[in-house]
Length: 266
Image 1: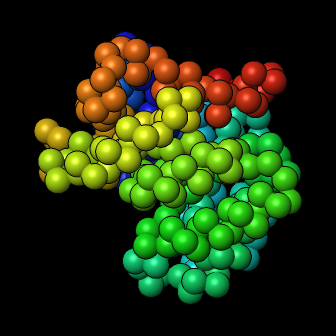
Image 2: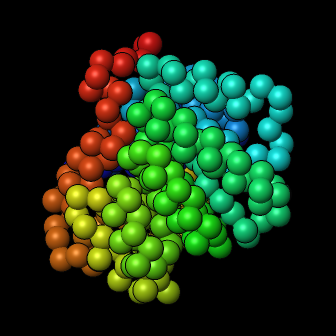
């Protein structure tokens, strides 16, 4: 079975003791690619370095909204420089978050706009985090779409079917994480069933959101198979066909720079 984990934070300290084993388990489970997502300038540098060590990893660079207030002078310029590297396949994660109060909302909006503009300037897709901010995110996406085409993904989606449909109409993909497998998530599974098959992605958001039946454990990319199995059943498909199609979708979104000849330094 061919799987693609479109969002994982393998740079985090909790993986330092067994990162190689985690990646080996992912490979054994059929995971062929993992998007290693940066959340700060330093984290983004680390995921680029990890991608040079591990062939499965493709890096995304950005400053997550809850970390924007801690960004230092030169951090954004560092993200821009990293984005020009041949191994980098995406911008983010970025977005908006009203749940936490770590960053003033206008600062979040400023950084979200920077990421969207960098995506449009480089042609790299962006990765959107949203929490209790769906209307605000949509407003900024609509504004960005007036400047030019959008390419990106709504990561760990928990919104409505109407929001998913609008995001798809704007050119985005919709990705589901372990939350969709939870017993209480009937409504979210119903939303997932409405997403066009060519715009559907899956992820772990490791080390967070471990899927059923592994809740309470540290999440890791090998566990994306549980999300695949859950959504395949919801959509009336075999897990093999679902995994193949979502992997092709991920390659179409994230593989543009690779297809154009960008190569990581091994």
